[in-house]
Image (tube, rainbow, N blue to C red):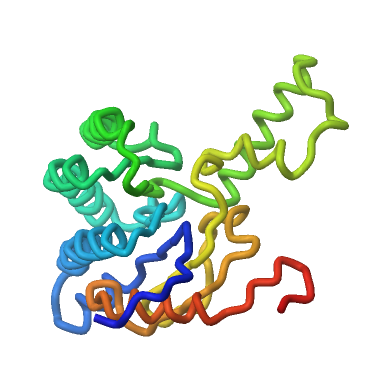
Length: 239
């Protein structure tokens, strides 16, 4: 294992890309890639916990993924449910707090129940927050926050003149997670795909060629080392 640097990101976001290509390159159905990708989720969550990452947000299913073939969507929902149920003991025993963001109401009822149960049962854990972005879109999250603020303003509960970056950010579903410090995307694609647009404002970006099922701890450590080597200026002139 690569030595872990002292300067660690507080919040890591991962766009887990490449399951379908992994399966296709082996002559397998796409669902086989998603199933292998679920094993990688298990490994990387545990690796981040050991490295004392405070918050890990995984882009598990986007608002736009609903347009995929019905059988693939059903398989993904089933795998998500399997993951939540199979990892329940690990999450609780390792002090992990589970959170979900996105249009959760659009998920199948069984998956919603499993999510709600584990989120409730893990709510007092303080070792690490694991957030699953499900039926999630960054633009959609920002639009929903704007709708909440507009309703408050219309009711007279909020003055339009008082709306600033802090006020707006507090109405986002992801507000409790804090800003993303490091974004990792697998499979060699160089885009952020509508993921945590607000929170990524000053994130460091790390793109990895490995497909998600092939993503290992050494790739995670390479991303952490890259983060530690960067001079984060936040608009200042830096060191």
